[in-house]
Length: 267
Image (cartoon, rainbow, N blue to C red; front, side):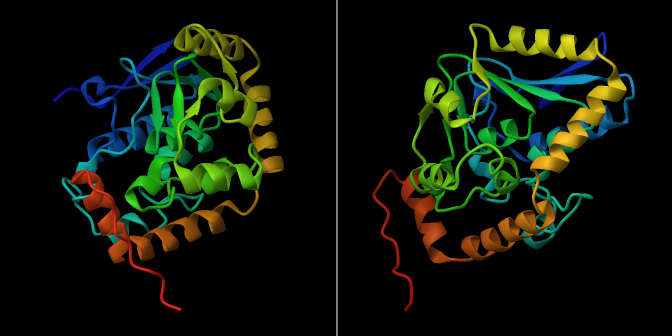
C-alpha cells in the first residue's frame, strides 16, 4: 500500500499531497490518520513557513471512502471518534480539516477536478484555495443523509452568507469553479493550481516568519466565533443522525441506485 499522504519540503515550503489517485483521493481511515500525522509533524517543524495542500492525479478529493461508513479499519467506537481530541475541540473527523486551520503557518490548497464532501471540508481548512477551471465543489453529505461534520461550521461562516451555506448543504449540488470564486469558497481560478499555490507559498516563506504567524493568528482571532461550541454541536447532531433509520436508508438507496424512502419526522 502506498503512503496515503506524502510530504516534500523545499526551502521552507512543505507540499502535502493526498496520494490515492486511483480512488480520486477518497478519504479512508488510513488517510485520516495520515493527515493528522502530517499536520502534527509540520506543526513541530520550526523551519516550515508555509504549506501547500494538494491531491495527486486529476482530482483533489472526491470525498469520504464508503468503507468508513462500514467502520472498516476503525479501531475505536463512534463515540470515541466523535469526542473532542484536540485543543480546539476537534474530533477525529473534524481534525482532518482543523489541523490545517490550526497550523501556525499559512496553508494553501491547490484544487482540481472533484472537491466533494470530505474533500471540500479539508480544503476549507486552508488559508487560501487556488482552483483549476475544471474544479467542481460540493457539500455532498446530504447524499448520504448526513450533515457536513468535518468542521465546516467553523470554516465557512467567515466566508459565506448563511443562506448560501444552507442552500449548498440542503441540495448537495455541484458548484463550478467560477461560481465558487463568487461565493467565496475559492480564492482564485488559475491555469495551474499547484504551480500557483507553490509560488505563493514561496513568496510567503520569503517574508518574516514571525510576522506571517502573527498575521494568521490575528486574522483567525478576528473572524472566529466559538469554535469549540460549533464543533461540539456538529458531533452531537451527527451522532444522532447516524443512529437514525433515515441515514441508513439514504446510504442503502445510494448504494443500490434507487430512490430513497424516508420516514417522516414524528410530530
